[in-house]
Amino acid sequence: MPLHRDMTPEQAVMAVNTLLDLPEDNFPLTFDSQIPRIRELFHSATKNQWDPRTDIDWDKLDLSPYSEEQIFAARQYWSRRAWSEYGAISESPALQIRFCEEKRPPDMQLFFTIRSQEEARHAEVCFMMAEKLGGYLEKPVQELFQGSVATHGVRKAALDPEVPLEAIIAALVCAAEEIAFDVFRHLVEITRDPVARQICRAIMRDEVRHCAFGWHFLEHQVTGMTPEQRKVVETAVITMIEKVELNGYHSAWLAPENPASRAEVEADRLTWEAGLGATVEEVEKPVFVASIVRIRERMQALGITLPTFHHDKIGAF
Image (cartoon, rainbow, N blue to C red; front, top):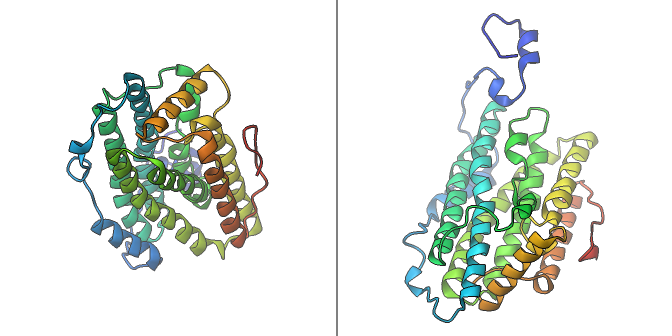
């Protein structure tokens, strides 16, 4: 039922399906800092902007040492990386709307203006790398793999008044982005191509701030949360890890075993062997497990308990 001016307050509440259905209410409007550490992240982000076109040494990309097979594999890998970064371009504005509608601390709104820019340039730099390798691929070579790299649903959840913001941030940032940061830090260590390594390092530096935002927010909120609210956060984080991360969202080798995932894993192996980015199961597995262990420990300190997880290629961890 659409909202209209003749509705009673009770009818208006019943008509709300998403935050976009709520009447606009911007005032009182304050810019006072309520979470100083997030305000500091905003200032840090404004000082550390970079341009994918001019701040990456594209002239150093020499493809002559690589085989056609390796170049095509790397083209697949960097296209896939662009897809995952692109998802954040749509989720950031949705979360901005949530911050405004719920009158969350302005520190959060300020930081996410920069976070949106950072995710956009991550997608752009990965796209540019794929283009340099022969052309960006708009979708997986095998359609079946779309189930692993499709959106994780944060944009929809961000506009759903029934889903607590604390649960969204905990799942998206304190879990998924924390894992993404560790992936990029790992790639910086193992990638030999100077341009691919420079891209990974640039993205990693932004991800540091993204992760810090999530933990600062959760730490700020957790003292006022009830056990029931913490349980909702716990469930959201578990769902993100089990249904998204362990489904191959960031790492193809974690995806369900099928011809499509095997093809992506093989592309990653060829890319890794060439030193053009990507990683492989035997190298990344301890990194991924360590990420989950650290997330579990930090959550536990906040009164949020994560269980032991299981994956066929890892076992219990």
